[in-house]
Amino acid sequence: MSAWCVAEHAVIPKAGGQGEDRLVVLDDRDGVYCVAVIDGVTDKSGRDFGGMSGGARAAERVAETLAQLSPDASPVETVEAMTSGLMTLRREWSITADDLLAPAAVAAVAWPRQQVMWRVGDVHIAVGCGSSGDVRWRHHVGDKLIDTVLAGTRAAYLHCLLIQGQRVEDLAAADPGRALIRPVLERQAALANRDDAGPFGYGLLDGRPVPERFIETFPLSDDACEVVLASDGYLSPAATLAEAEAELRASLQADRLRIRDHAATKGVAASAGSFDDRAYVRLSR
Image (cartoon, rainbow, N blue to C red; front, side):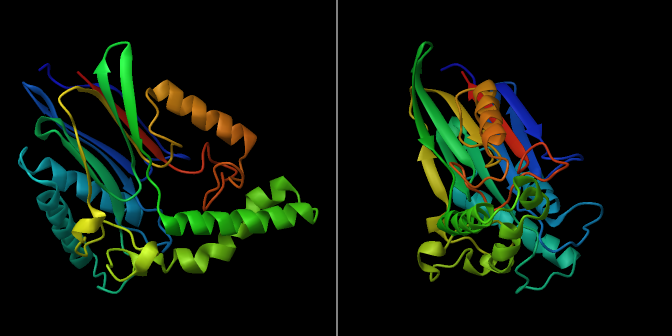
């Protein structure tokens, strides 16, 4: 079988600076053996971690941990190593075990030589199988119920305000819908990595053990020829970067408040180019 290589990639912050998304590509003379998209959780604490937000600092630690692992590490072993690295990060910054605003991240990782991909959290994944000109795609869109509920609540509230005569420009600047759901946003990590959280439970890389049910795995069959990983700053794991960008651009032009077809927990800030940082990578062979 031919070696895997990076066909295209991008890491684009929603505003200026570095953002909270990270891309990891590990290779050797036989090609790429690991690629990952890591999405640092949007900081809600306002704390500074050595010039970085908590999400950016967590994403950095996850990336550093991944680079130190053996190419044959299993998904569970990898997640345990990431958890250990983030627990060390908590100790370094004197973050208590019950801090719900601790630095955190989600990630999707592909190990093509092991013929497996896995994720913790809401990073998009797609696999293309077949041959050139006849690729069949399987999409695994990243989402979680708590985000769907909160995005819907925010959207409903902003629709109410629009109907009552408030201007889109004013709502975009103040985002009272975000303020409405903020108490839940600040507490939702209580639902993370908990088997007893019911339908609202989800996986999160934050230094706490991640139950195996929140480590999703996806096999790579022998005829897999393309792999896409994309953070949820994109709407889907589109087959090419150009398609992902075009899809996002059209959506932003139609709905900068993010309250219609692709409702989100936040809109596009006045100084930002999008509602979230975004990272994309496509592997091919």
